[in-house]
Length: 485
Image 1 (cartoon, rainbow, N blue to C red):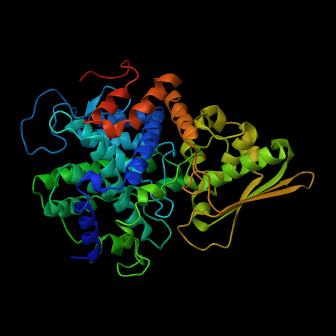
Image 2: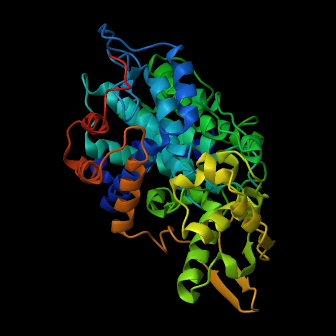
Image 3: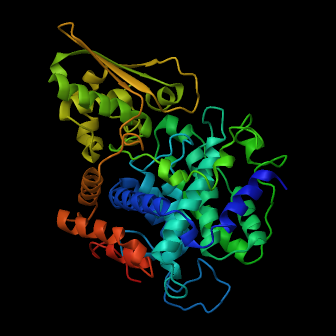
C-alpha cells in the first residue's frame, strides 16, 4: 500500500472528533459554506439548470415510503435530499449532482489557487446533500459538517498541489470527488477498510477534461456535478461492503500514473502531503469577487483600481495588456465575438475587461443575452491582449500585472503579487455579505436583501445547530416552481 493513501486515511482517522480540527479551520469552512450556498442559489437561474433538472427527474424521484434498512447510509432516506432553493426532493446522488452544478455553473465559486481546485463545489454539494438525508435518522451537527468540510478540502488540495503538468483533465472535479469521498466517509462513520473501498470506488468513476472549458460549454460545470454524484455513490457502495481498488494514488494505474504523471513524489521535500495536519488548506482558499474564473479576477480588479486612481473611461483607451503566467493565459486568453455563449464569455479576458470599462465592474448580469450581443463591448475587447510574464510554472495563477495605455499617450501599470480575493488580499466581511445578497437577488425567485441577510446570519450560526438540514430548509424562497414531496 502506497504512502499517500495511508497518509490521507491516517489524517482522517486522527480527526474523527470535530474538536480536533482547529477553530480557524472550522471558521474558514463556515465562510466557504456561506459563499458556496450564495452562488448555488444564483446558479439556479442558469437556463441549463432546467434542462438538467428535467433529465434528472427521469432518473428517479424520492418519495415518502420509509426504508427501514439500517445499512442505508446515504441515499435510502424516505425523502431523499433537496435541491437547494426549492422544495423538490431527489435521490441523494442526483440532488448532489444538481447542487454541485449550481455552485459551479457561473464560475463564481471559490478556488484553491495552488491546487487549481474549486474545492467546495463538489465537496459541499455532496456533504450537505448527505446531511439533508440523514436528518431523520442520525442528524449531522454543524461542528461535524465544518470539520468534515475542512478535512475534505485537505484531501482534494494536497492531491491537486502535487501536480506539475499543465491542467489537462478537469482537476476540480477529480480532486473534488476524492475530497468529498473523504468527508462523506467520515460522516457515514466508515472504518479504515471501508474508507479504502470508498476511495477506490470514487477513483473508478473519475472523469472530466478541459475540452469543455476550451469550447465554452456548460458541460464543464456538469463534470463537477458528476463528481459529487460519484462520491455519494462510492460511499454508499462501500458502506454495503462493496470492494474497491485500494492503491488508487500510487498504484501502477493509480491517479498519479494516469492523470498527473511527473507529479511531486511522496518522499519529496516539497510534497504537499507533508502539510497534512500542519497547514489546513481550507484556510488557503481564495474568493471570487467577480463571476468568472479565478484566472480573470486579477485583470478585472486591476483595471478597476487603475480606473479609480486615474479616472479614465472606455473612450480614453488605446490598449490594455495583462501579463500573467501560462495557466492564466490558457484559461482566459480567447477572443470575444458577438453572440458568444455565456460559458465562453465568463472565461474571456477581453470581454470581461471591456465589460469593466463600460459598467465599472463585472456582475452576474454581464452574461445576459443582450450583453453578449453588445457590439460596442466586443469592439472595446479588441483593445485587450495578454502576454507572458516570464513565469513558467504551469499551475500558477499569480502574480499578474496590468498595463493601460491611453490615446493621449499616458501609461499606467499595476503589479499584483496577490490577486484580490486571495488569503493575502481578502474580501472584507461586508463584501462577502454583499456578494451573498447579490446572488440571492439573482435567483429564479429573488430573495430580498433583508431575507438574504437573515439566511447569511443563520449559516453563520451553523456551529450551534444540532442538525444542519435546517439550513437547507431556509433556502426555500418560493414553492411555486417546486414539486410536491
